[in-house]
Length: 148
Image (cartoon, rainbow, N blue to C red; front, side):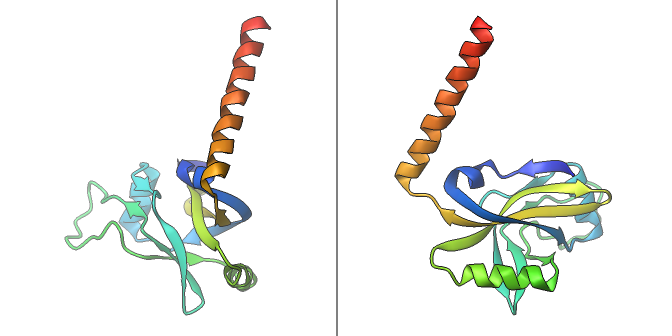
């Protein structure tokens, strides 16, 4: 799968518990816009409406050659998942402090796929620990590079 946009903030703000791959129900001009990379998942989330997952808050910019006058870039987009996966997501949502977030969007052949995750929000001290680990890993890599 070719990754178009990665939600880096999601990996920093959340502890990832389980991941799923979902299809997206898009308009024709939206898939063209996604192929050009005009998509932003920052601040978006997945909610359940009538036991169907829906992507909310994702920004798919207007395709440059689209003639549709009433295009809305932040509209809700249904996700395509199999029923056992939907049931698993619903079971996870019943747990306290758990949410479903998009991790990245990519192209799988001619279809746009969304990698979603069941996640739990990190506390401030957990975020600091992540920054410390990232910094120490970077220093080790630089030392290895410098001294062979």
